[in-house]
Length: 265
Image (cartoon, rainbow, N blue to C red; front, side):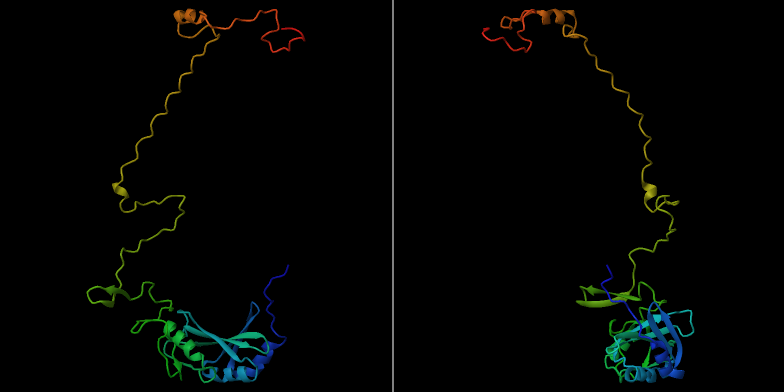
């Protein structure tokens, strides 16, 4: 049975068509995992988007995402995901920038880019030239730094709590309840080679107790006449009570379970 999702198929010759359309604005074309990515010059972004929307028929801007590569001179990549309703196809457009150089806005092409550019600005600090409302959108007012940068501390810079004294939410420097522990990442089956705090107070384990002796074998009697309680008890056991039934004769079949012949009492 085939997969329920339709297979992604790039239209024949679409990469060459878009490459010729972008011309000198195109830096690199990447075809990976059935996805086409076009890296364009940062200053030519707006013109490239106009060509893709009006001439290549990629009418909708679906998403703008940021990526941080701190080791690169232009550490940020801004990725634009476009959808063609008529072609039923998607492409990705990328530009690179640093912390100070702005990226041209595309809000005049797609109004939805206003909020999408604000997200990238809030998370990464990328500036978009021409966006008239470039404010934070996911973090709070007065937030310091950009959380999606790789050099942003995992604990942040400030923490908030509700103050009973001030009757409001207050911001304070981060105070961890305990210091970070250093882990050696050894196999848990091997056991740690160090003593955790508090373990030194535990009492040493007691030595294992000796194995208990084997239980004596119970004494069994060899016959019913032997009670195992001595001669006096054996003689008492041989006495018959007054209401004891009589034992049938050995030569008869009574008491052996055999059927009696007909007419016999």
